[in-house]
Image (cartoon, rainbow over the protein chains, first blue to last red):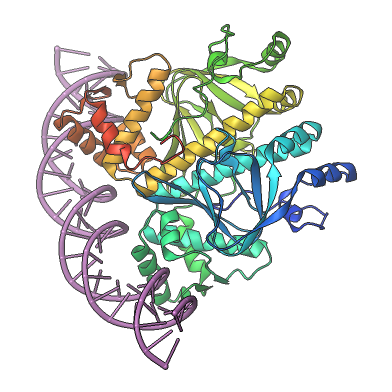
Length: 248
Length: 248
DNA sequence: AGGCTTGCTTGACAGGTGTCAATGCGAATC
DNA sequence: GATTCGCATTGACACCTGTCAAGCAAGCCT
């Protein structure tokens, strides 16, 4: 299926003294290299639900990786329309858009009480010069974000409401499963409006489509609590419209 | 206005023996560093209209910068829906999505007879370790692609057909102007269907919307020949829905 | 506990865009 | 120069989603 997720979750390292590193730092670093990384990564910072990690236009200094909790990023138009550009869970990296102009290009907001690791970019950049695999890892992370954005474009440009929502639910499910959580029973961290903002739909359409899925017996909806009763039906719904890649 | 363009066009260097470098390589390289770059960049390759530069699933080895001509990139779903993810003109870079999986994530197709410079990625990567400003430049290019993708998401998720098309025309106009071409009189290199594929619209809607703009006296349409008669009206149309950034 | 706020659901309706179809125009081919 | 094919334009109509509105449930505050 399409990967609408952030680009970090599949890489793991053996070092476990920081949960972040399990998820987001490259394999293949020796003891000395790990120590250098340790010296650069800043202690985590806590954010309450609704707090901004950064805002559009803020000076760019660091990337941020979610340690616990959830964030969304979004861009806004002058007349106030909001487009959520991503939802981020543990291990996922935010702020890559800030490098180009030395200014953050979107807002990042905590969806619940959360904390993040700060990665000062210029120091990561110079460390990358000493540690080629680290440099390569950052290129891969940025590239992965671009790939994710492309599949979001496919979703926004070509899919119908039911397909978008099915793809969204399956994407969440897969990312949660890869973190060891239940794939078919989870809590939505975002409102209907925020889901709609990400999927290019109005909140009423999100609500109606969830109800429709429930009426068909494919899912169970209890406010933010979602159970996937027939994930295979959702998969069938998105099979046709999902990206045809080398693996398909 | 939103920047829907590819991320290279604004950087220029004084070296002029290769038109590519005027547009896409970083400033601040000394003579020796330029020589190292020369040794890595491959001679240009020619492509006829309709030819593929690369396809989804092809092994990733190189980035490609347009020297002359025009390309589009697009992703496709299994059931054949196409989403154009970008149009590329001279100096703009394609293939950044391939880094993440060592496999190209989209198709790149020449819109007319074109030629490109090939940048073998692993050699650029190692060169980046010796030339920090080059490394930083590549991070900026990738970040800029992410920023561009975000504004496309805003377009696809929130704008109406007229707004999308106005934003598209103004974006083309601005990129052409930055290359020394007329801003208000140009030839579309892509079909109505390809424009629609990029904007998340059907070709009939693109055609109708162009006709509407023409009836209002804002533009003149003669097949692929477009003249912007009242670009300020188009700008007014997209003013509200364009991204609110630090500069606005 | 009561009232308020916020978010969600559901319905009726409207409007924008997609779909289908016919026609026209231009470029390429023979 | 005639024919064919691809692309574009335009119209009629349908349908999906947005808009507006009402009602409901849960959580929060006093």
